[in-house]
Length: 330
Image 1 (tube, rainbow, N blue to C red):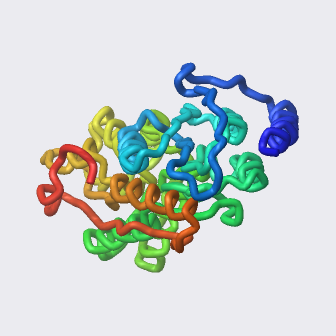
Image 2: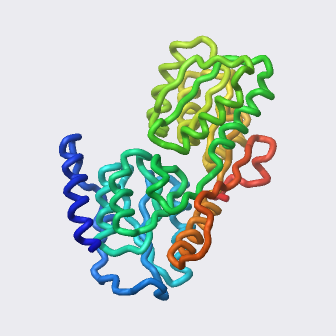
Image 3: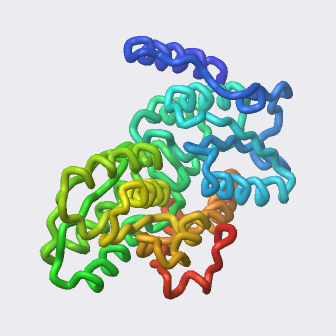
């Protein structure tokens, strides 16, 4: 039955991709590995097969998130299969369809694009395969069994609160975001709602796709066009680090940079006296991973579980960074 569903849906999705300009699958043979053994175990079996697919797996945050889930799953004697879409939504969709054919019992998913992953989610739901959505929420929540991730709106809000305390009279801010990533959207929303009616003007904003390189080039342009910038709110730490590089290249100072992740690399910037990075909303990929693994197992065992879980986020800056250290994730 799963094979039949796979063939029908695969043809439909490929047809859509051909109209949109389909890209070839990328990645190493290991990324696209196929399970040769048939899954002949029934409900209530002693072990399960979990699939894992995540955006930006080359970044340390996502590597730690993956390893946290893997440790929990394999520690219970279950199988954990990883497919790397290399941040390509078309590849991710195709690999999710492959998981259906391979007979996985459940999938952990951090989408490359929160909306364009919908066709593969529809196929997984049709095949009766539960999805634990991690970190970045998908657009259609009816297609997943559970979500676990950071309280991203609060991660942006705490940056806004700090900015208000630093500049009580307001000022001009730049917002660098990524509209295809729901986690970043939530952070920016939290930030903007917090500084609303507090005397701040958005001097410029841009979609930099969560990329350090794009953020750097974009900020170089913005700094050349604006005489006054008081703060830059960045949707993630990679963006913040790109802004820092742009400022150093031009020798510009006098504004605050806010990130959102609390990565080891950003925390190392916080301890430098000449860094423009003021702070970040901090999250814990280790805690997210442990909770996601627990949810996946509970779903398959037909146990009670929460369908939405937000892991606490908080503000980290120069004053408290030593409490958390600068090496490794929380």
